[in-house]
Image 1 (cartoon, rainbow, N blue to C red):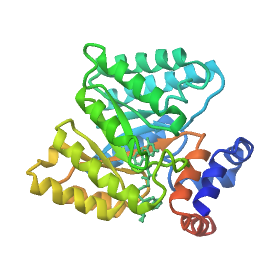
Image 2: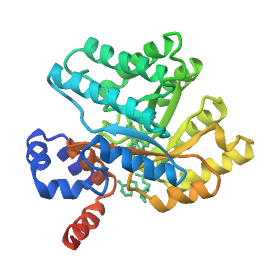
Image 3: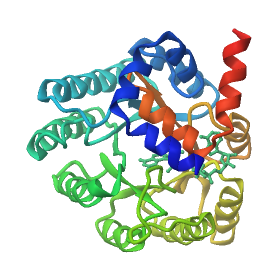
Length: 306
Ligand SMILES: Cc1cc2nc3c(=O)[nH]c(=O)nc-3n(C[C@H](O)[C@H](O)[C@H](O)COP(=O)(O)OP(=O)(O)OC[C@H]3O[C@@H](n4cnc5c(N)ncnc54)[C@H](O)[C@@H]3O)c2cc1C
């Protein structure tokens, strides 16, 4: 019930507007968000790189309703790519299509992301297109495939698949047939039973099946989870199948299970941290609270400590 409540909160535009402007809201978000400026996220990226972790940077924002806003968001991503290159950081970027204008006009989003992928190809970087709610799944996968088909962009753009979606096995087969890189996660939105598994046990066992397909594919997957059982299963499968540690990477979110992130690196595995930054943190934070409502107490404790 609490999960549903926080997912519902994440979709409330009115609460979002109030929360993002309040100073208490900004303090609250700091546990999961690396500041509001490009400088903040570059510093957080450097810290992670120094610890042996790579990064994917996410400029927070989604469901923009104005074309200028979408173009400004794309411009910020161009700046991120330049800053990463200039500073020699080990980081790529993660982009949401609704941040690039998908709700306004599919062509606008296509134009924005296409230019970003071309820019990333020019600086040997990579654009990960995040996966949003199910009403965007097909359009997102279609666009990633279209961008990936452009000559010279083969290693420059990748997709995300959610193990709670019933369709995911088929989607993975199709993406792997074109050698499109995939990040596998459980999925963070509220979906109906006809589209998505509802029980954690089903989501987890599907995750493990899909993880095995990805590891065997040789198409450099990202195994994005904080779930220790799944991480153990991935390590065991890689060892049994003699899949080398540089053939895939684990991925986790900024501020979550930092102990485990560093342990994996010490054990010789690759680890990428997804670092969000920016002022539009409200839906992101609500989704993190939905995953673990106990975070409310954790955040409250930190607020009172200040
Ligand atoms: C790198 C990365 C990229 C992602 N990209 C997407 C995307 O594009 N689309 C999408 O729908 N979802 C995305 N997600 C979110 C994902 O779908 C899950 O909602 C999220 O990762 C929680 O699932 P879990 O695998 O950690 O397992 P869970 O079963 O949710 O959690 C397992 C354990 O992890 C820890 N944990 C998990 N979440 C939290 C939290 N919020 N706070 C504290 N501890 C926690 C707890 O110890 C928990 O017991 C991404 C996640 C990661 C790590």
